[in-house]
Every structure is written in structure tokens, then in C-alpha cells.
Image (cartoon, rainbow, N blue to C red; front, side):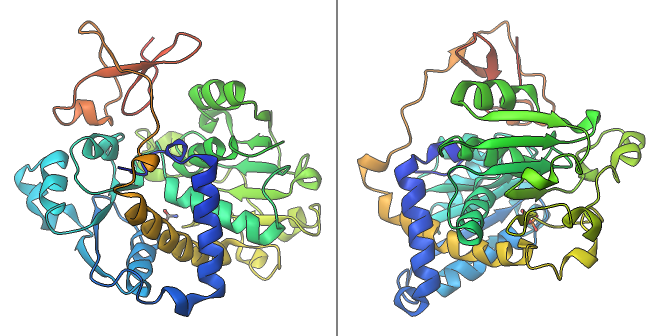
Length: 359
Ligand code: CP
């Protein structure tokens, strides 16, 4: 069965099928209106959301299906101590597909190990957000007409920004991608993305310290919010929160056809004066999120019983009783998930669930 936990769970062909279907849905909405009648989507949100939860809900409604779930885990039996795995076993009795957001990293991967219906990761801590990635890819395709060959600048919180991590991984499926990283020292891209994704999969990247020096070369500028909720030290948050702000003066340095993306919500990293610029694509991006989730739900339900679309063959986990993941926000330190690991080509051992470096 196909789940979507990590962007790399989708082959390039599957990615293309979803993007193509989303474009067809945009052009022929009436054709899909009743296509998932009697099917049910459960949205299990353990963490706040506006866009992701409502776009999943709107997507399933537009496909003619129904939606159930919770937007606050405190109102469910999670408040009595029910585990993630038990919750998805139960909800799988009521729904055909589950979209889950969780503040604990690896929660959805752990859930998928026992689920009898497809699990969609709607964001796990600062780890991964693959349906935002599908939204971003569809938006780039629609704004520029292509994804291959782009130079994309990621700006802001590249350390905790799960949308950035997921999009860089997915871009490794495309040709001739150049990535420019624009972030304060405290919020630089984690090494595991640089090593295991950029270096291993051949994405060229460079790190710069100002937006101005790279604006003229970008096809896409991907802005992100500095996320207060991910900081343990609020003084550090105050130091970096206004590091990079996009305004009309900086937009004047950019290409005429550059697209500005932002997963939203924004705080003050894009001034509202930029909203009127035709290159500001972030509200069009929100609407694309609904269409691409319609395509994803359709494909996951179509692929559910087709072994050709099973999860990719991965490496075998490494078990070593002397080692533990030290990430306090990992599922294996919050529920009884086993401490198991994956070994990268360079020999680095990483947590199976959250990708933290073990040694
Ligand atoms: N982009 C995004 O994930 O937004 P929400 O947190 O509102 O779902």
C-alpha cells in the first residue's frame, strides 16, 4: 500500500501523475465532482493548521466524499493516553484514507507501520511536509511552465522549516536544479539535508548571507517564517526573527518572471506591499494546495491495492541496543516506538523515524 510520509515515497513517475492530474482537475473540475462519492477522509490534527486541514477537507468535499476527524487532539481519546498506532488502527475502521499532522517527528511513519488505510503526512514537527511540497511543485509548474532547470532561493528558517526540507528532497527528482540558501547562522539548513540530499543526489547549492546578492539570479524565491514554536530558547528566537524581510525594493532587483512562494502563514517576512506584485504567487499557491490534494487522495485510493505502487523498497533497519535517538521530539522518545536506525552511504547512522544523526 502507498502512504505519503516523505516526498521520496513518490517516484518521479508518480509525482508526474499527481501533478498532471491536479492540472486536469483545475481545467475540468466538473469531471471529478463525484469521483470519490461514499469515500471518507479522516483528518487527525495534533497540531494547529489552517491551510493544510481545510484544503484537505475542501478537496475531499469537492471530490464528493466525506470528512471526519479532529482538529484538536485534546478533544479525542489521545487526552486519555491513546497512542498514535492505536488511534490509526481505530480510525482506519471508519475512514478510507487518513491525513495526519503531528508535532512529534516520525509519528506518521510509525502510524503507517500498522495502518490498514493510506496515511498522508500533513506535517511532522520540523521534519517533513510532503503535501506542501506537492503544492509547491504544482505552483512552480504553473507559474513558470517548468520545474527542471530552475534556480530556487530558500530564505529564512531553513533549520526548522519542514517545507524547505521536503521541497529540496523532491527537487532532487528534477534536472539541473540550483539551490541558494539564505539564512542566519542559527537557522541554516541541517547537515543531513546537505549531505544526504544535495551532495548525494546531485543538487548544486550555495549559502549566502544577503538576499540582495542573489535576487537577480533566482527563478523562484521561497520565503519562510521563523517559527517561534520550534525554539526552546526564546532569546534566540528574538535575535533572528526579523533577519530577512522581502519588500518592493528587493523585488525590484529580481527577474520579471520570478515567482515568490511562501507556505504561509507569514508574520512579517514578506511586507504586504509585495502582495500586489504579479510575481507574488503565495495566495495562488494556497489554492493549488486544494487541487493537488484532490489529485493525491484520488491517486492513493486508486493505488491502494496495486502492488506496483507499494512503498519503495528501502534499506533494512539497523537495530543496536547500545544506541538511542536523542531527539526529544522524535516518536521513539514519546511512544513505545523502537529505537532503530538507517545507515547512509557515508556510513552515518540516522534515526529511522526523525533522521537525527546518531553517530
Ligand atoms: N502551509 C501550511 O502548512 O499551513 P498550515 O499550518 O496553516 O496548515
